[in-house]
Image 1: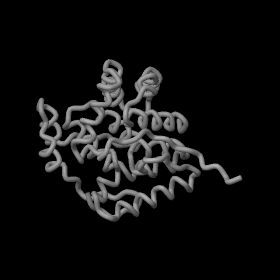
Image 2: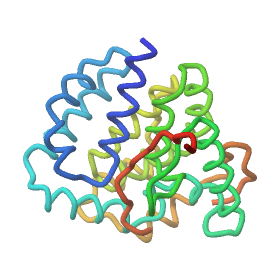
Image 3: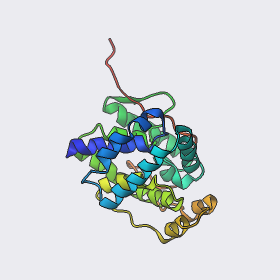
Image 4: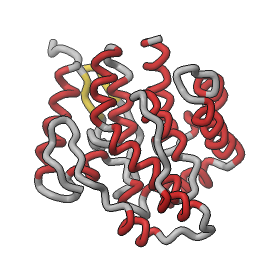
Length: 228
């Protein structure tokens, strides 16, 4: 089961990353795993199927444009975890350094231009850990994941299902907020209004103090090799 959850985390990481040809080529394998994952609630699996259907029927360029439109237009839909914790404050920089140190302590480092708090990066990191450690760190982002999924639901995007799946792995099921439900029923959601309505309550992550981008780069972890 633990190995299966690692595979699920890695596939959710791929789904939430900027779409590329490798992702589209892997959709069949992802569908076979996620839509039959007993650790995910039936409703989440069904909604993941909708996301996979969308990615399967659109061209790569269309999927990339859709991704940018969703994740770059509203800060409440940001996939950068520390943006929900620190906003643009100086504390975010130190938090990045601390998270990088955590990755490196596990023998992993990031490729050029990648930020450690990007959710797909974090999920891929968790996929490398043992079950208990991964579950503990997943629990620390459950509040962020819930708010993010509600924001994505309000935008009317099936990407909400991928974040719901992350939340489900923590043992929680998202309770849709009335404001998000109303916004999701609107054909043209007001992104600025959503940001005002979805000012996150204080959250913490990896011991960070409470407070509230650019198109993300593909995720790549590398094992650190000892110097010769």
